[in-house]
Length: 261
Image 1: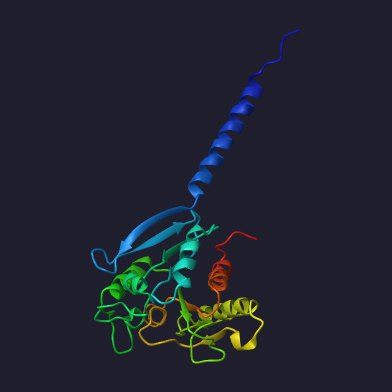
Image 2 (image 1 turned 60 degrees about the vertical axis):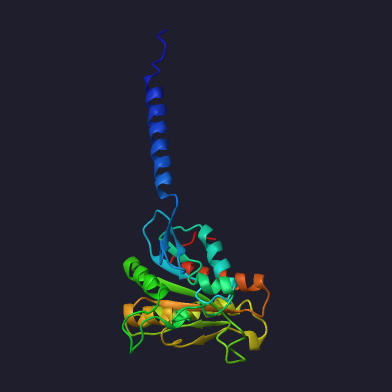
């Protein structure tokens, strides 16, 4: 009896190996890539930004923290977001926007002509950013062209029961982006308030935010949807980190950028 040919079996094995190799290549190409760059190079404000690319087409979200140096949770939350497992799109994270202010643990950058970074962006009276860091951050925003900007902050009290902006979602609204900003702000607000049982500590919505602030300027001058996500620093650090991460993830999930739970 003639022995059966092994050629069909070998061909099937070769085909299977080729398919497996192709699949592995696709996975490798889709693996998130992280790159780092610098802003305000050669100045006292020099700081790093981190671009995380999922490898899949999708939105780009810019996340900024550390604009005020006495707000300690936002930079830590931003660094934790560097490991976020994106399903699609990209994030660009700036954890320490004002390093001099952070080093001094102060709202203001010492020895700076314009010490409050969050008042140095374009306004209705001023078309260009001023100082050192604001122009660098503004230029990066324009060159990146993100679909969303999220600015992480903290306040000294609770907006529901004081004049502080703490525990709030700040939304500047322009007719060009209003249909995106308001529903997203409401979603973030609802998610944050599910973590709060005390009514005086509930998150509120504030509009439009201070003139000259980064998020408001990106809405009004660049028509980029933006939100300020504020926690309150009189609460334990871990609670503030949890709330910061929850609010950012609510936006990323709404944009389809996070894997399904």
